[in-house]
Amino acid sequence: MSRWLGDGGMEILAALGVGFEDYGVEDDDDAGWATAVFEPKPLACNPHGAVQAGVHAVVLDAAMNFAVNAGLPGRDRTKATVEMKTETMRPASVGERLAVRGAVMRQTRQIAFAEARIENEAGELVSRATGTFLLHRAGEGRH
Image 1 (cartoon, rainbow, N blue to C red):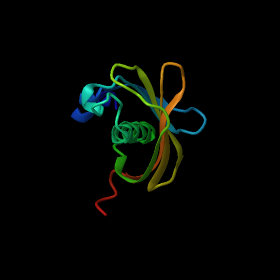
Image 2: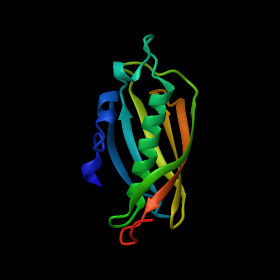
Image 3: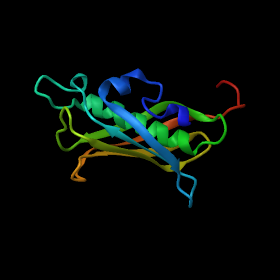
Image 4: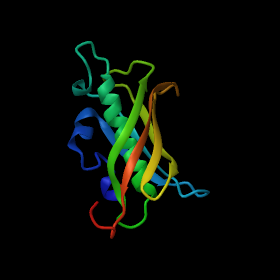
């Protein structure tokens, strides 16, 4: 998965100012996690300089996907985001340095449940999301 650090192969993330830095698995339950830095670029913002809510959703979705993939074995991967809920609680603007973290809360054979959050430098919650992800298990064929 180390090839996915940075923009994760998604040019939109780099264009918005997102760089994934690290990922891993919690020792006690094999749940994946991933972290990133988000320094919003003008493309991520409205004309007043505030990051758009939809941009928060893109960043949070990517963090949850990275987290799920970090905990999957072999060539297993996320297949699709089935459902996602986002909340934006504080404004973020161009040039701020924001911390992003995604983590798996529960995983079954076909579905993973994850959450992600974006915090400002003061550690205040800026936005958060929960999501449900369909998994592709290598070797199971197409469904």
